[in-house]
Amino acid sequence: MSTDDLTLDLLAYHSFPLLASALTLRKDSILLEWESAVALTLPAADALTLKSLRDSVPLILQEIIDAFASDQPVATRDLVEGSKLHGESRFQENYNMRELVVEYRLLRRVIIQQISEELDERLDVRNNIALNMAVDTALQSGIVMFTEHLQQQISASTEVQSKYLSFLSHDLRNHLHHALLHIQLLAMKLAKIPEYASNAIDLESVKQAILQTTMGMDRLLQCEQLRRTDVQHVAEPVDLNSLLPQVVSQLAHEAKSKGLALELEVPAGAQAISDESLLILVLQNLLGNAIKYSSRGRIKVTARNNSNGEGIGWELSISDQGPGIAPEDLTHLFDAFRRGDTYGKPGVGLGLSIATEATRLLGGKLEIDSEVGVGSTFRLMLPNQAPKNKI
Image 1 (tube, helix red, strand yellow):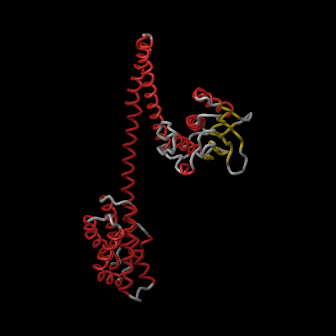
Image 2: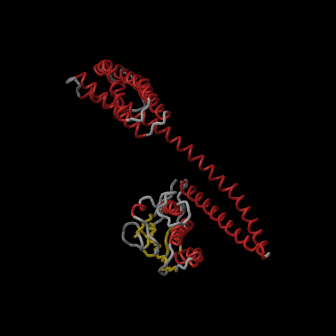
Image 3: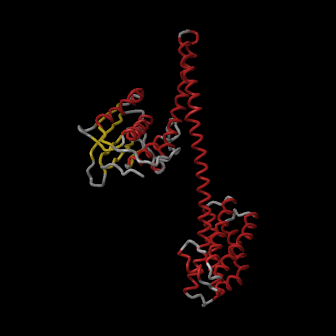
């Protein structure tokens, strides 16, 4: 019967009676000192937690003693399995990872200190290695089990979120579009009746609110779809002289309504190796973000061939003369749902997160330069060759 871990052969196939005897003599002292250290270091530990300590620590200590006393791997395997149960119980007791690590560090310190005192100068190299191996086995097994349960919890939570997003994508979105259609028809009828003209204007604001809601849901779905994508998109030659004007044209009306000038600078024959749909998605979000937060001046979209020898092909930049971004907000700028000073603009903070995920799939990177009161420049750095497909 094996432990399935060759690194534990010393502990699994050899006995250490000196360590087994010392640990047996010091069990009660270890328990008392560890309990005191946990209560001092983790003041949040309540009476129930301390009771759990008293229940679990003797079991772990006995399994370590049995592993020292035996030259059969079954004892070491029992230590691994028992320690896993300890990690699982800590997860059920709502420990966080930091608390668990602190508790284990204290256990390690107390055991080694007590055994060293008991054996005085008789702790030779071989026994020292075995002692540390046993303590490490107990601690690592518990943390591994705790982490596995944590991953399962996160996975289950993610699945719930995906089902919720699916609901948004189908049922709720369809209902909103149905309501929007009726509002449009009603507004058209009311607009023809003079005494109800003002009501038609009110319905227009309702229509815009629904449109903003559906746009927000679209961004949620895009972000989730990109985050969960495992397969690399196929990269093909993309004509930037065609693609960039297309993106600018899509958002030209919004820019014009705010009095913003859009400028485009693309050299003749500009061609990148990339995924066109993902590239459009990145640029739409970057340019839309620039328009959203700008209230004056111009926004410039530029493409230039970067031959710096660092694997970068084309550099696509979008520069605005907006309010700029404070340095403290730059660190989390590309995180989902994280927003700095929005200057009164609505949104949920997904545009740049979507751009980041799409850029990751393209094998590129995003950079930003910004100065408060001056403006911002976002740069999309595309690789000079297609990223390898994931299998």
